[in-house]
Image (cartoon, rainbow, N blue to C red; front, side, top):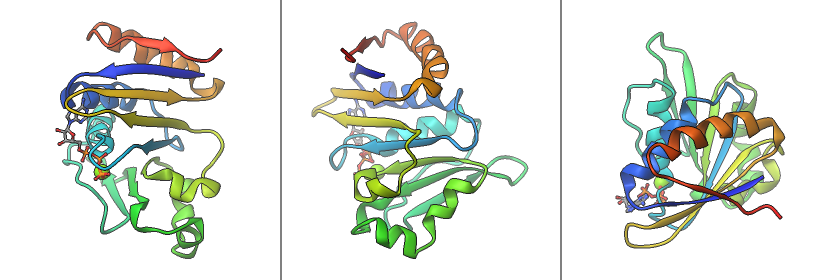
Length: 167
Ligand SMILES: Nc1ncnc2c1ncn2[C@@H]1O[C@H](COP(=O)(O)OP(=O)(O)OP(=O)(O)O)[C@@H](O)[C@H]1O
Ligand SMILES: [Mg+2]
């Protein structure tokens, strides 16, 4: 599946993240690609909120990965920014692939850098645009369809509409 939508504000992008955060389950991998300032971290901020996590999400650029725990101290969200890695070799060398086996959701900014290390089953989000407008495409396999139908229903109430671009 390949869905396309338009966000007209940072709040709307966060809100989409929040709706997705409400349906994700441990082990899900979400990739976030798009230029500097596209809104990948903004989306992740919403994602964390939707997952019921209280800490404010900040960019993991210098640490590569930030972990967010729930109120019981259990790690739920692993937020990666692989911008500073040069390839998936760096990712494996640092043992970062082990996060895929931990019982949490992985959100990965700049995922194309580590493309060959990524699981096939994932929600792939691409963000582009300028000013306050962003075109957001979401590519996913059947495994995510019912979750995404739920997201769609919720977001349509907030006036965000989706176009199915899979022909
Ligand atoms: N519709 C929109 N969706 C998301 N962000 C928007 C939108 N309109 C404007 N913005 C602005 O774009 C910026 C997005 O910043 P953000 O840090 O989320 O980008 P990023 O993709 O994570 O960048 P980087 O590659 O540097 O990590 C913010 O300043 C935000 O206010
Ligand atoms: Mg970012």
